[in-house]
Image 1 (cartoon, rainbow, N blue to C red):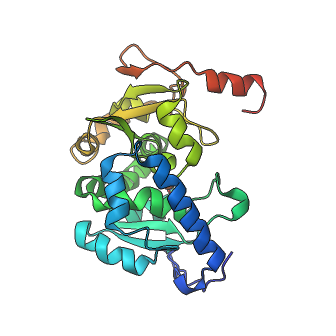
Image 2: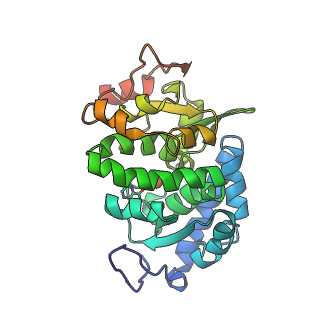
Length: 286
Ligand code: HBI
Ligand code: FE
């Protein structure tokens, strides 16, 4: 890990200290960038691929936030700020509500190229930041930040976190070319990029706000269900144009639908075999 000056205050923002990254850390970025772009060429939504290009994430080495921010700010008013890793919910929401995306400063090491739980700079900047060049998606992220602060007051953070999980992290979108990836948890993962689209195991269901907000999710393995939006306008209708207060009043506390459920009201795009999850459980490794 590179050494960096920690200039932290309440908002957890630190200096990215771009000159402090080592040659090997830059090489890890280049390796991951090329590997994911190959996998995503025919799998990711065009808006995500266009975002990679608009931000010139391929200029060589770990991107410098000062450079990304010139382009990003001009497009949607968003900026990227560096944080040490996961930050408290309220801090996270406050940044988003003010059109700042907090991105991990560090990059994963060579011993964990394929999976890590903390959000590093590759997950955040390759996965999340590109879609912030899209005005509709940028509005969704700001609204999510504001919604997060409200949800905390209602005690419904679990429900809102499920929405984030099944859209921003693990969302799929219908396009004229077929179902494509836009969620950052998928797009920054070598194996899940392939699993989410190509594997017969998971369910793929039409996105429905209330349904999603009631659904449990897995943080330690591939998703058993992916929710498919028709467009980013779908997400805006589900947040900016939607009054959550009545919903929060009749939602039971927490999330109640199992992650592999198919409910009578669901619009099923493809019903999963759940073979992967069952095999995992049988092997006792899940
Ligand atoms: N912090 N850096 C960072 N990145 C996240 O995605 C993040 C976070 N803190 C809280 C959080 N996500 C979630 O708990 C909310 O989306 C609910
Ligand atoms: Fe993320």
